[in-house]
Length: 356
Ligand SMILES: Nc1nc2c(c(=O)[nH]1)N[C@H]1C(S)=C(S)[C@@H](COP(=O)(O)O)O[C@H]1N2
Ligand SMILES: [Mo]
Image 1 (tube, rainbow, N blue to C red):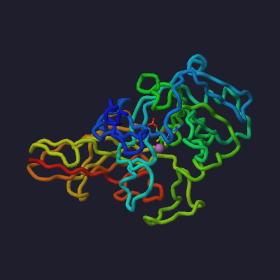
Image 2 (cartoon, helix red, strand yellow; image 1 turned 90 degrees about the horizontal axis):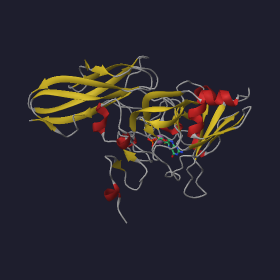
Image 3 (cartoon, rainbow, N blue to C red; image 1 turned 135 degrees about the vertical axis):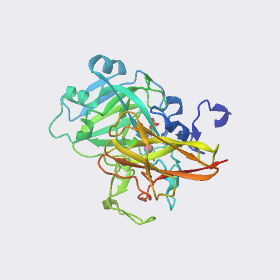
Image 4 (cartoon, rainbow, N blue to C red; image 1 turned 90 degrees about the vertical axis):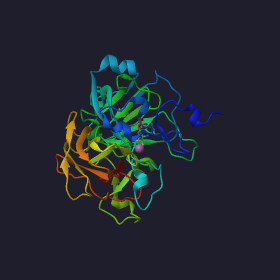
């Protein structure tokens, strides 16, 4: 049998023992669009069979049940595109101390892409909403490896489902969705963590209440108030992870790398699910003084912009740190909020390189 190395025809980092969890190398985070072949992949169970004619069923508290292929969506609804960040809630988990169980992601479980599809709002309004509907249940075609593992089913509030940015997407970066990223249709929930972005979407059902079960009531929860690192948190003091906190990541230079004396450039990406980025600052003196970086790209909540900062430096080791602030005044923290599942790591990112 071929090992993962022999099969690899893309630049993604393979996490040992978890073949469906592929991480994007940091060097890709110096550009506005992450190419699809380098875009991280997260799948709990692995993909279902590839079926581009698979239908999406809309039912529950709606006036008429509907069933649609991608072609039906294209024929009956207005097409729309959005460029936004997809980030796994667990991105950066391996950096939390004390360590927490789960996929030990570095900083590469994120990317920015242009997603194209139709508004979930338009589909739900065509189906006709009954007044009691308050949540939307989402299911994919992938199945758990054994019957004791609950299927990956989640729900989002009806308000979020009706947000005009929430899409049922069938294309990514101008091409039909790939199998790994949820073909033929997936949900896109700009500004919210990846667990809401249901792949291989086959079922959207309007319900009165939030989904019961492991994936909605136990997994993807974050403490309602700050907790001591390592603390056990009772379920009533946890809420679902939703909006991505403000964050920046340095793509260049590479941590541990070398550069010639003279001109140096620090570049990376910054985003917040709450609001557009206001500024990214760089410190090369351990956080005593900060200098504003320049920003490229379209500002907006859930969108990343590229920052760049140039300076000159003589021979020696230098450490650069990045700190982003969004337009609601949220500032990337020095120490991120520890939590039992290791979500939303967003500490100031630092890289050290040797100038010689
Ligand atoms: N059906 C289905 N959808 C899913 C998942 C899954 O396991 N099954 N994983 C979710 C999680 S946790 C994340 S972070 C994103 C990852 O999307 P990507 O693989 O396209 O990067 O998909 C989400 N949608
Ligand atoms: Mo995730």
